Image (tube, rainbow, N blue to C red; front, side, top):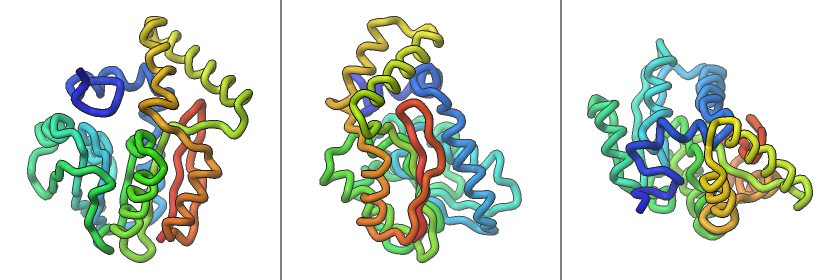
Length: 224
């Protein structure tokens, strides 16, 4: 039995996720690049669905010269335990809550949500994104990466086949690959790029833009 909503248990997540998600490392590199472009000198940063704390680890290692205070939230206590073990308690707040339970108001310069909201049905996803919006200060930035669905069933099928071929190239067994594919539409509930933009605008963001796209994953950023 898994101890979180991803395809992997917490202790194996970091070692296995890149064989299932193309360009997973690039997701975090794109986040760092966007943060650099914002020219922050000091950041109060909320990472919801933080997992093992990868975003925070990368930020603290690479964003030199920026004073960063992190709040890390995740619905999985095991994920948070691993994050705390790697990052410690120095200046970092940990909360065992989901995005739907966030209760912050205008506190953060950045909110990130990496591969965590695609598990949610529509109403819960709307609550999650609205909570991220409310947690931001004015002019704050929301950055998110999610599994997506393409606009057309035929093109979506092509994208899924590309994803399948990627996993084969990484040595994943056919049974494992099929399990990932079968989660799509059942455990994972992807929406289209345009539906993401509609949701961000509905949540109150002034601007919403694409950040990155490949296979069946995409990144977005939005400004409050």
